[in-house]
Length: 147
Image (cartoon, rainbow, N blue to C red; front, side, top):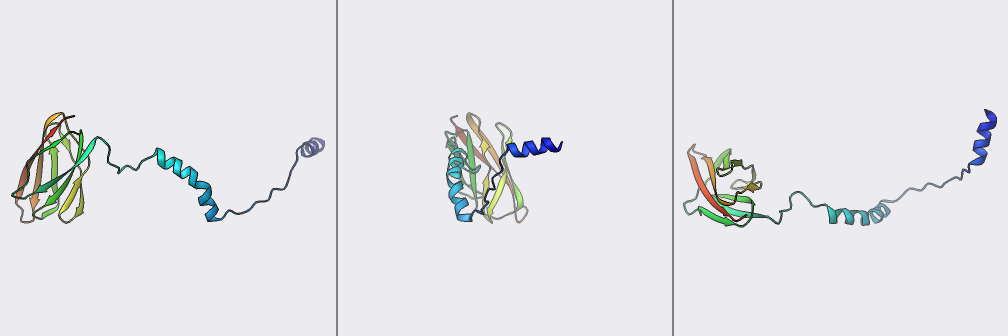
């Protein structure tokens, strides 16, 4: 067994490799080409797709526009509130296809939805909100979609 071990060690060459630490600036230089390749392939999730659109909607306003047109199949709504609402008291449902939108609060009077799926033709969105005084407001928005 000693002879076998000695033979194996003598057949393989062991060169002492010098190990050096890589500085952070060298690591950045090395990884830059890799990062640029990854950036060209992968896109962030928050990028608006080519088949989507953002519509600005005034909510609880007297002069609010009730109809919109969109050639896209997905839309986001920017909601600008004329009157303050209670926290978490806005809901949006596309009654045409039953899609319920998720809302994100940006400021005290500005909200944004996630992508709302539209069916081809007329889509009726029901926006329900509760004002600070407890009054419930229902606003309908009609979106004509071409896709």
